[in-house]
Length: 596
Image (tube, rainbow, N blue to C red; front, side):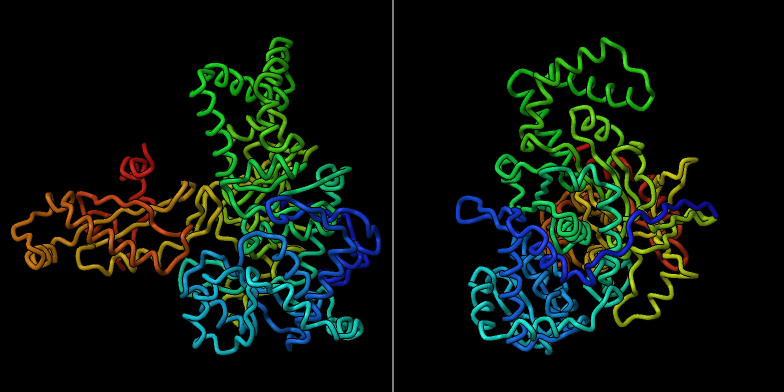
C-alpha cells in the first residue's frame, strides 16, 4: 500500500477544550479586534474581551435553562456572528452543538433532532420555528427553542444573570480533548444520515498544526477571513475554529448576492470557498468585460495569468511574459483583487475538484488557491497545498499528524489526529468505515512521488455539486420512480452547478394513465414532449424535492427515448443502475441539461 504522511509540527497547547479558546484569547489580547460583525446596516468591531463576555452571558443562560454537560443542542441558522457565539457558549457549558442546514426539510430536521437527542435548539427565524413545530412530536426530547431573530441572545443573557462564574467553570471541568465536541450529520448513500462524532481534540489538534503549517496565511499581521459557506458544513466549522486558534479577525456573510460588497467592506486576507464560487467570480468578470467591449482584453489577460502561473511551476518565465503580466496586473488583475476587498492573497478550496485552469488563473492574478481534501469524518481537512509547497491539480500533502494510504483498489485511506471518534449510536457503521485504524473514504486517488494526493474518482455513488454540496441520489430517485409514469430515474449533478435527473417512461403504465387523463392513444414517443405528461413528471420531481434541502433538489430533468433495463445493459441482475455505463452513453443528454 502506498503511504504519505507529515509529522506533527505542533503539540497540545494550554487549551483543553474548544471552550477555552475564547477565554484564552481575551486574556492574551483583550483589546484585539476578534470579529467584525453586522450591526444594522453597517459593521461593528468586537474585541476578544467583549466576545468572551458575550459567550459567558449566553452560556450562563443555557445553564439557567437546564442545559448540562453532554447535552446536545441544535443550531439551525445561516452563517452569522450569533452562530459562532452559540457554538462557543454551548462548548462553555460542556454541551455538544449539533448543526442543521437552514435549508433542511422537515424530515431531515426531524431525524437529526431525534437521533441526536437534542434537548434544545437555537434557530434563526420564524420559518425555522415553523419547521420545528412540524416535527416537535417526534423530537420529544426538545425542551427549549430560542429564535435569534426574536432576541434569543438577549433572552439567554437575562436568564443567566444570576448564575455564578464558578458554576460555568464547573460545568466543563471534567472535559478534555477526548470529549465529544459536536455531532455533524452527513448524507449517506443508503439509509438514514449518520451523526459523525468529532472530539475537542480532533478540532484543536488539527487547528493547532494547520495554523503552524499555514502560518503565512493565518498568522500574518492583520489576517482576517470572511465566512460565507454554511457553518453547518464541517469545512466552514473548521475554519471557524482555526480562526479562533490563530487569532484571526473573523466575519460572517449570509447573503451570497451581496458577497462582493461584503468583501469590499470587510477586506479579508484569505477566504475559504468551494470551486463554484471561484467559477462565478471568473464568469462574472468575463461577462462584464464582454458587455463593456473589453472581452478581448480579458481573454488575453486570462491567458497571460494562466501562462505566468504555469511558468512558476516549470521554472521558465520569459521577459515578454513578465512584461505582459505586469501590464495586465494594472489593467485587469488589480480590479479583480479589489472586487474581493483588495487584500485577499490566499483562498482555501475544498468540497469538489477545482481544476487546473482556475487554479492557475487565480494564482496568476495574485490570489493563490490552496486546494485541499477531506471529509466530515476527518474534521474537514486531511490534505492541503501549502504556500511554499503546492502542485496545482492536486489536493496537496497530508496535514501534520495525518497519514494517507492508497489501497490496492485505489481507495483513499486516512489515519491520524483528524479521524472521527465514530458514528453516533451506530457501532456497526463505525466498524465498517474504520478498519485496522484506517478510515475508508470511498474515494479513489493516487499519490505522486512527492507525496501529493490527486483525486481520480469516487467509489461511492454520492454526488458532489460544484458548490460542494454532498447529495445522496437514492432518496430522490426512489421518490421520483414511485410515480406511475416513471420506470427509471438517474439523478446527476456531480461537479455540476445543480442537481438534475434523467427519467425514463414506464410504457406498460402509460396507456392507462393517458386514458385516465384524457390522452387516450398517446404513444410513448409523443408522451416524452407532451405538456400534460411533463407537468405530471414535474409534480413527481417537486414531491421528491420535499424530502431534501433546496441545494439537493432536482432543478431540471430530461425524458429519455429508451428505458434502463437488464437486457440493454443499464441495470444489474438485481435491478441496480449501472451509473457509469448510463453516464457514458447519455453524456450528451446530461450536458444538454446544463446548457451543453
